[in-house]
Image (cartoon, rainbow, N blue to C red; front, side):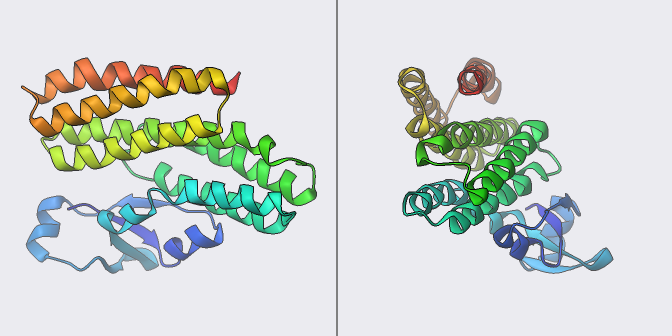
Length: 233
């Protein structure tokens, strides 16, 4: 079981759009020996939070995007901007994972969301459709992030956790497609099917973690990057 150290108000800050950071503290072996609770005291006025506590937050950025679009549609610019900033903070939370392999992409998407929120609040964004490209980019950054996490968990032999992150990656690809142009929909739908097929293969029991990783994860990871490149054009 992995634990991460947070500033005492970090989790609250995720909801209030405060800057976030955390670092891994302790080893899984140490955690299992002491059997600590989900949150405990840690040095420097921080809290150590069980990684599993963060699982319910995985789909929240997309919910924030949907709510931001709804609020903008009814003319509530401040509420829409707040929702976008909340999503940006949660994406920074993911980027702060000690083993995040794509921090730059996540932080870039968070920065884009902050800029979008500022434009929305100032009234420079006139139509909800103007949100689509930034939301799609953020969704694909999260998809790539969770895809990499799934690959890492499979290599560690943790099939159940790999499936959790692979499902999250697949869901964010679906979400990105919903914000995207027809061209991206055409590319995204087959990718979703391939992700689902890989999940079924892992659930059924691949011959080896290496086979599933090399033949499945790596190829699909490149397809996610290709889709993200189209969004940025």
